Length: 451
Image 1 (cartoon, one colour):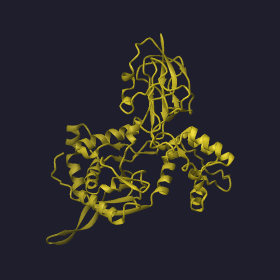
Image 2: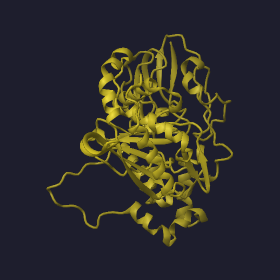
Image 3: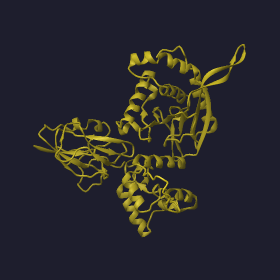
Image 4: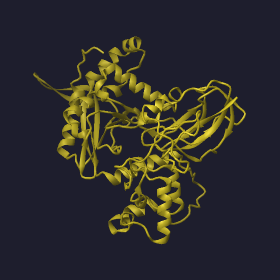
């Protein structure tokens, strides 16, 4: 009989800790290898942690709602099973980060170390080019909780230098800052938030109602964890990027009629339903190749143009929250490949089966507002991207059709498109030109094409 440590896994390149949402097993319960033992939440997505061996759950080391660093032992499983090797147990994580050498027991959570022959973790230390620089703008639930308890507004929190991976603020960073703050010894960088130009942001981040709501004819709902993250992400995006939105109209009659004609044969041959989303993504990818500036990000005074095209697609969850899974290397996929990826990610999102990496690395985002009956919208950019395109409801309308014999009026399938873009680097001419190019691609869809 052996005790095997269950480790908090590394869920993504920049994720250094996770919150335990719910234990699915309790001490004494039998567990099977690969059976979910608990549910965890990161800044990116919720996930499940499976048992690495079969046996009996002997001990739980962290309670629900506690924040646990990557690599920490969260439970122990009593087993008679032959222990798997490190490569077998965590092959997925080893693809991202190689095993590190043993580190001293007093190391910080970012410096993880193996503790025995049957227990191993992945070492992740701050890189030289990120340590000590301005933070990444993403904060763990633990850091946000400490900031809230200490009365540190978001504008001030964003000025704290982070020593974690990619400049993330760690627990040690925030606690050190709190200690200096209480003695009045904060750094110049963290004090700049108090200047007049930051007053509006400070007021927004710490705003409280003037009077406590006493009207009984209201319902007060506490935001869940994901809604809080979405709210913070949206506010930060508006504070970061000067948004401009352009609109276009497209006659998508050929596209609609083609899909209606082939959808049954497509499902019969491929085993997948074809929606409009992969057709929109196909058009977007073609236009990004012509206008690569739309597939970029801004870092300080530098423009980073991405060579890979990773398209995020905004997906509504059953609870009303929003998540953006990413189709990696969308430019390398044909239409069938796009359909399968769209359907897989949408289904995984609805069933809470997305992996953290499924929501990372996007370079451009599509949101299909027409799914919910909306004609058009002004979407908010998904940072650190510089543009997001929204497609509205496809609706039959009478429109003027130009023919060699003269103008006539016909019933056509029409759709509005809107593009929100970062005006720091995308001017109106480029944004409007790109949007018109996408509309042109959709309008000139080949009704005779094969799938």
